[in-house]
Length: 235
Length: 235
DNA sequence: TTATAATGTCTTTATTTTAGACAATAAAAT
DNA sequence: ATTTTATTGTCTAAAATAAAGACATTATAA
Image (cartoon, rainbow over all chains, first blue to last red; front, side):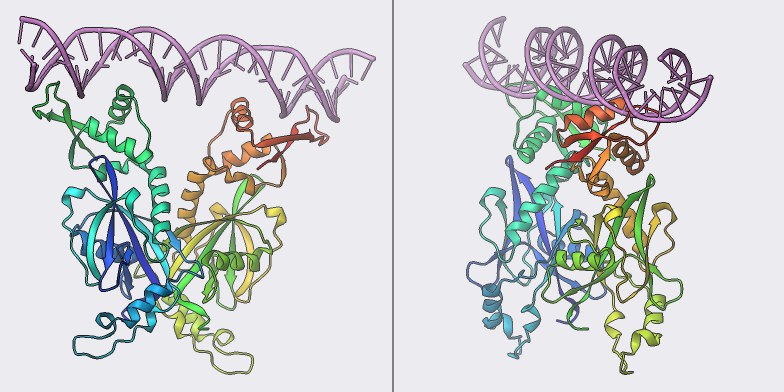
């Protein structure tokens, strides 16, 4: 395992948006009872940290071009999860290779500093895949995230704070939507992220005045009302 | 040296403010020709990363309570400075201990991921000290910083971007001023940080409306004009 | 043809920001 | 002692921005 930088890890908070709900990608650790975690991994010796994060995300989402922000390093001295690491080290699936030879897992039994990234993806574009340490990978509503290993719950909280701070200022929200969407879709996303309602008339004016949307054809859904325009994010 | 986490370092951009100028703390590396750097160091195995940053800063500033923000991790695969590391490893001061025994410095000859912190200090409170790897530690005007080792110049640039983004929003500017100051002092600081002039009347109103300043006595300087009030930052 | 629910946009009102004005004042100059 | 000068503190007016209200439009069901 010494291809990796020692005692340094990456954990990714992958935000998705569907059915007026913010979701995050949660993995279940393979062969360990009831242990959930953020998609994470380690940094190869000859790999940029950002590239490592993209590799780790690609393994789970199959996506190549992801909006990524490295927002904080987590490195408390007591940043350990003894219970979890113990289980991993004692588990035959983990500590034994295909040839039945014991693998030295002591490198895991140290304090790790973890680089926290958050990613924004269009949930429709994601093809979920399991990496070799995942028993499952699933979208979980942000308010239904179970207890996670290490400080992963705290990492999510801090990612959400960062997301809210950057959301409007940098117009990163479009990364959570399909490439084509209605003004209502966008407004509902903003309302979910900020957990507050916006006035429809003023929201539309504010967004259109930014001149970052291209107006496309109308969207006829069969609903008994005026059909809204579709928009695409430009530049 | 294996008290430290391998391949992980900390670099601090220490901002100070004096004579209407933003300054940063720059160290000269001991016994290496013309090599300048940010105050930096490594993380002890049993040390929080934030505590490590405070230790590294205290070694140079003698300060205990510093405004600190860990703003980004720098970890490109090519994040190396071969020329500098070579000089260190070949230098007798570095590679030989007091008893004349060779020290193994190979741990330095790897790619390091560095956690970037920036600090804001009242330059008047700083008592500069050299750590054991510093030939000197000095305040340098932000626009006169020489070429530094590794990507330290880039770290300063990015710290400045972060500083500007947080400066107003989080009212962190007071950390750069003495505990007692005039409105003019504060305005000049803002003008330096944002490199733009502010209208005196409106600046004063905006700041006072924040209700974070306590008005103290007047400051009589002997100048032939109305004496300004002094203020203290509260809460 | 009418009713309904949502949409797009305009107008009005309220709030905030910016600009202008001026009296107050500390000390030097007269 | 009075005037002058350079700031300072604060008020008011104007401009810009944001929030609230109003209403015609329209896609489909009744």
